[in-house]
Length: 256
Image (cartoon, one colour):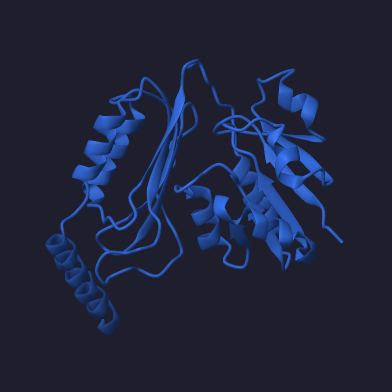
């Protein structure tokens, strides 16, 4: 028997993933599946969900068949439809399986395609999108370790118009002291600080866990963004030095 499948859709930055996280905390079911198609090699939301909800089975684009095969074994299923996909993609993915359609929408949005599609409307962030020629840009930085101060400066510049009109930006980054940070920005929404994901510090060489960035912007200078982010990355020697310093500090804290 196929469980109730919940498909969540809405415009960029409105709070789709946040709503799913709220449901996961409230329901606390044993076997939960999550799939967000179209993210390719930059699965930022999937990686964050795995860190915060380790019992949830998260699927990437290459695992679509496995996702469908495991539907019958699940207690709950969430499919998040990114703003960059047509609503009709749901039918192609689920092959006409029954689902509950949830649209997370800003309060000022009226009479949209999401209103016609959804079984239920959830009030989302009061986003304001005036950019008409925006496009999405993604880049993986897996294996890279960043200097935290440089990352702070880069993120400030990115979200304050230095490289183009950014509507939404999010990323996951490995930091020199071994922490794993999630960054999130939505234009018009109060600033969120970097969130440390609940995973062990990586203090042995270059980490192979995913890191990367996704930016939705108008007139984005992609080459400069990539170059500036690359300038935040540390050499092998610098990584080793930071890791040794961090291990020493952590050991001193334990002894104290």
